[in-house]
Length: 73
Figure 1 (cartoon, rainbow, N blue to C red):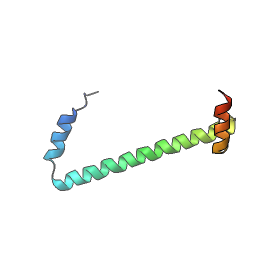
Figure 2: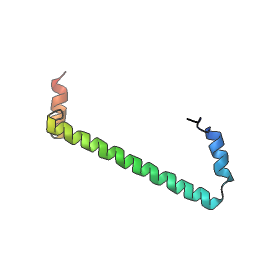
Figure 3: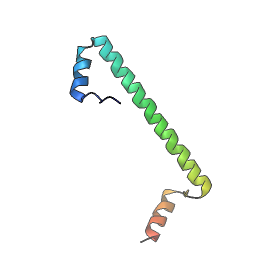
């Protein structure tokens, strides 16, 4: 596997692009980050639902959470 380019090298490559290409690159990076975050949220939701189904997670109100936390002290 090749060594990744340094941040400075990437900046220089981006600066060599036209304004339109830079704008397109920024939009592409933004969309990819949003999609990655959506995937993380979906994965967390699936894990939470599985924890609820298997009894590893509790459901309740904020008052229930406070009572549970304070009862451990």
